[in-house]
Length: 463
Figure 1: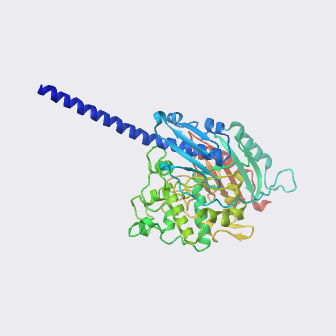
Figure 2: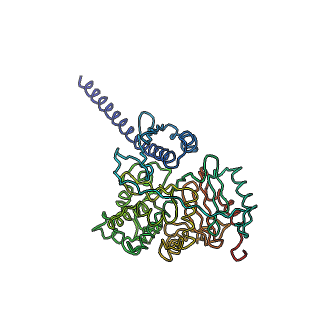
């Protein structure tokens, strides 16, 4: 009888342990799937309500080539409420994204979204001057036939999945090409091109003496922390803050995935990361760093009595005539400066042109004098590959140039899956390329087209 009781206790205990194991496994599965559901809800919401694309086209094409588990996550649109819900099998990993006019889409983490003031009023887009080959405005140093051939070849084959290519020379559009389903009105997701937008907003604030990039960044969580309080704006901009951050998109529970698709306060999540190195000692790429910059900039602007969105509109986007740019916030209401900006190819080109003109537009200085030189000055520990939220084409000690067919002085916005704004000073040229290059290196896929475009444009002195 005693033996039976002991056996009974053992099996009850084993059953309880198994039940706990199943609960734990369920919790772990929910946490894993939640990241995928967050990704799918956010992207589906933004592509339909911010970019203006059809739900059927988005769902059939936007998630191709992703891990098989993503197919198990179902998406449901509510066109009237402008929300998107996503959930995995057995109801695991639920996520909801909500669209708000002027702010794009936000993941409603924990069911809450911070209220925001009405979005700044819209304004009329400024038309781009054009220099087509058949008009008297044609730029004579351009081989239009070579440009047409290069883009026709790229889009007919389109293994790289180009979506838009725009070429501006001397401040005029000389060629523009779009894949089916996209046009000059389509908003394109930045991914990490947003980091260069964030740096541009910092520059605009510095221009007005709201901050000095050499000063410590005023992060509230860092008060009283001797190590973190020494981190400057410059350390953050150059990705040399020393803060820990795991930028691994292939690991569902990495820091970057949790920050973008689970957490409600992206900048706050980054602010709480531990210090691993002294500032300026080590370079490593961190989307958390950029979201910390964006949140801190919002706080600085709030002290001046203005929101980041209103500031961006008044001092940058409106003077540029870039009416399409949307800065998407997190659930706490702060701009996700690492990743979530939507703009047309033409407005991405305006931002590149602003740098080509050293921060001056229509005679008005929007960025500090020398800001373009600042952002393209290599971060000391980056082996010449990175400036201040901009990528560089310099050769490093341990690596070749990213784009060997174009000069070292080129620098560029760069985003996941091949989003680029190339600034090419020696040809007075800006090239925008958006796409969805998956399963291969986007740089390697885009490099031949970029070289062909570069070769088709002559030197300014020759014109």
